[in-house]
Length: 339
Ligand code: COA
Image (cartoon, rainbow, N blue to C red; front, side, top):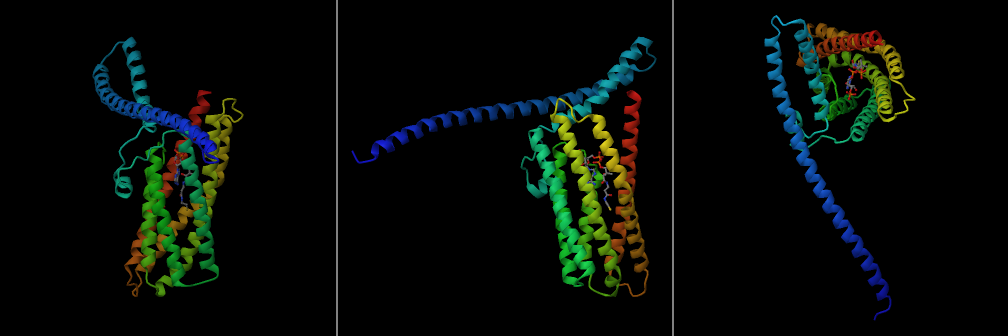
């Protein structure tokens, strides 16, 4: 027997045994995957079935509501209350089930499943999204700082605008994936990023002329300010995320719901003046561009289109932020009443 062969044989036997074990584990894994996909289909069809039946029951309840006795009114009220909470429960269940991508994701990614199946991976994805936003925002802040104070080349402005287009397009994709995973991002913020991508694209095509030079510094200062506010916003939102995660994970509750609420309110009241100032800056940009569009030597279509975009951004941002704050105040008041 060749020297060293016994050693090889022994190693090989060991490897073979491990390979058999691996095959068994993998077989088990495939079997469980199969079970899981059956369960997923089962759950999804049960949910849609429940939704339909719920609609039917709500109709029946409405019909019954004409002149019921006192006891019946109580029962009906209870059923109505439960019917109201069901859609939320279905929404939460669906966050852990694979579903068809919406139009935008199907166009960009095709029909690949983007549902993350555990809470940890959802948190990790959101965390990574916030970090991505922060890093890109810092880069944009430095870039606009450089363009504003040190160099004045149309070429560098174009790179800044291209970066902005790429950043906002990426955000729309990531946010669609987050929404698919149960995030409650309001539709406006996603729409805001589409408009911002469009606005930066239009800025990119604005030819270097007198009017561009007049608006350039105002736009760069605004970009600088917006990046600064976005850094604050990222800090606030990742703070919310970490605290919510700690609340969900720790059963000994060294972090309480009230603790989270008070942190959130402190963060929000600090952030809001900066946000509103930014919104009025958008209005100011819009009005300046409209005034510019009325000048006799204004030939560029970009002036009016950018003005319109800024105006839409102002209205959407301002009214959505006011609505978010009102909703938060309302739910806080309800909580303090119920305590
Ligand atoms: N962009 C992306 N996601 C946002 C968002 C925004 N502007 N505002 C809220 N969200 C997300 C939250 O992260 C949360 O996600 P989750 O369900 O995955 O946890 C969800 O939407 C619900 O958030 P909500 O409770 O409504 O608000 P919040 O406390 O997280 O943030 C504000 C409230 C006011 C700070 C936030 O909406 C905001 O920053 N708005 C202003 C943005 C703006 O005007 N930018 C321009 C600056 S010049």
